[in-house]
Length: 123
Length: 123
DNA sequence: CGGAATCCAATTTGATACTG
DNA sequence: CAGTATCAAATTGGATTCCG
Image (cartoon, rainbow over all chains, first blue to last red; front, top):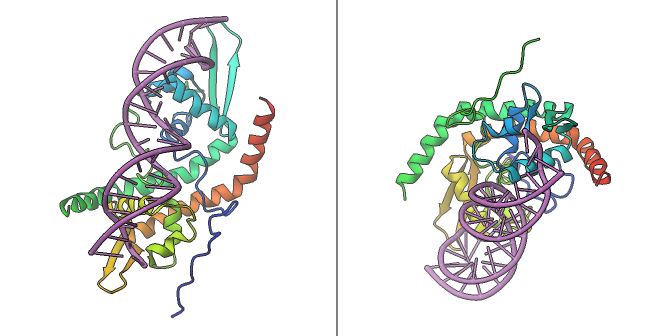
């Protein structure tokens, strides 16, 4: 048996490739990705499944996703105004690893909840 | 062409299977998973690659991962004390979807950074 | 309709000192 | 060594009001 290697101090420096993609960890991004999966959506439309998101937070989240190239924003010069958000090719590509994570969650959800309950007993 | 379906209001209710696994979104959990990949590690050992994590936050994170069944904690009755953290089978299973996400990030990192720079110009 | 502005609450993260 | 306790800072999320 080989001895286990010590952990290096710069294991997570800069471009290590171990960090999670930048914005999927926040509260709404992953859900927005799902909302846009089937096609472009309007601002108000997105608020429906995201019940209680405030316009401020929804705007911030969409801007950040736009900034990372996952989402495009198209404003039409109409009255009343109309704006559509859509996934870019990059955003669409992100759906694939996300699907893996979601599948994992579905597969192990009961197990995790079980462990939690056990853990709660021991306190 | 079929028209796009409206988004349902309960799309993200309860057990929808679209939510991310509970703890991977925080600052340290994903990195800890990596740190434990090669085998059990001690508390102080984990602080090396995680430079600036405070003991408080490291403890909190490890406890949460323990609570979700990803990590086991074993305390040996020695002096000086020794405690080892290791991945459970469940924690190890999580590495798989995480690898997908990391691979995606590595593959698209340059692209994202490029888009960001463009976006920064437009401001 | 699609936000922006302002203010505030909650949550997370961290610095520091101390202990069995 | 492996934490706990306390306090402070930062980040995030949210409520509300207003506007073109």
